[in-house]
Amino acid sequence: MVFDVERARRDTPGVRRVAHLNNAGAALPPSQVTEAVIAHLRREAELGGYEAAEAAAERIQATYTAIARLIGCAVDEVAVVENATRAWDMAFYGLSFSPGDRILTSRAEYGSNVIAFLQVARRTGAVVEIVEDDEYGQICLDDLRRRLDSGGGGEVKLIAVTHVPMQGGLVNPAEQVGALAREAGVPFLLDACQSVGQLPLDVQRLGADLLSATGRKYLRGPRGTGFLYVRRSILDHLEPPFLDLHAATWTAPEHYEIRPDARRFEAWETNYAGKIGLGVAVDYALSWGLDAIEARVTALAESLRARLQALDGVHVHDQGQRRCGIVTFTVEGVCAQDVWRRLAACGVNTSVSPASSARLDLPHRGLSDLVRASVHYYNTDDELDRLVTALP
Image (cartoon, rainbow, N blue to C red; front, side):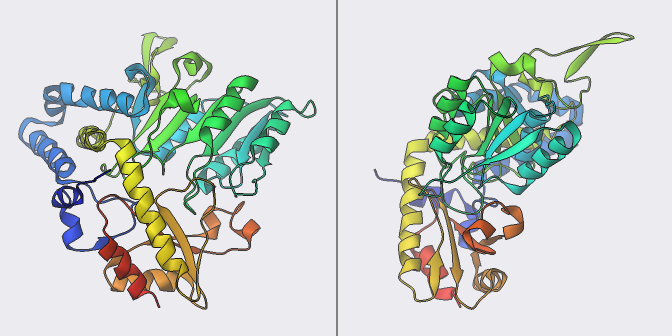
């Protein structure tokens, strides 16, 4: 499959200034996204905020249509929110838990999600259970099945899994998790923050009842944008943790009605320029094709792993049978922060995956902070060489 890297780089002004290998943090947006955001901000300045939103109603609605195409769902199953964390929180805190109810998650779960589990467990008496890893370091399907079939303990009320953990290139087997969840009749919440935009996602195949995602990472959208998918069949079993006049209608002095679609998880005030930019970013990704994007990103990541593994004193720590565009490594005798600073001084953008964000995983593997390089389709072999050459 031939990928037009030159066209991708022409659309991406930032590549002329830096080797950007921090796409799992925030990718460089294409010019089309930046121009769409700026155009709406100018319209707000010229017309007024409310008037600009009214004039752009079709473009705003197009964002929902684009997201529905991206993940294979209905438009009314999509809410556009401020970020992936808000999307995930609105779903999770919309569920109800009682003493003894069980929440199943994986060792690789993101720290913010685990904090939410612990808070709800403290408030309600629910129990958080960690499903063990298999020999590849991904969530163990046999252990998950055993916990679902277990007659002891309370009822399993939720399976919550991060699709692609922030601390490595592992891709958890979400489809198989979704199949087990459906078989057991348990809601499945998938954190797709790192996978959306670099992997094809179809919520029907994934079996996800709830899916949260961000705009700023592999989708190359604006910061401060994200979305939540809520399967229509589960919608009435969730009540948003807070409501306003967008999420509900005040029908009488002492009564209200929650709106019937996924937008009950939105707030009335929103960043319309960002929302429009998110839709442009999704359409831009779809124009390349997610299969083509995955092939390009995966090949670059494997090439970078091979380059790093060839170096004495450099250790790559990515797990999983299936791996993606995130590459994590350490350099013997040099802390991750110092490696990151050295690379930044050489014009190579990376990041650090701290153990404090993955306390169930990295310490369990005997690891502390990792350097994280995350490639995208507009990166080149020359940029990978720049990273390797700049290592201390």
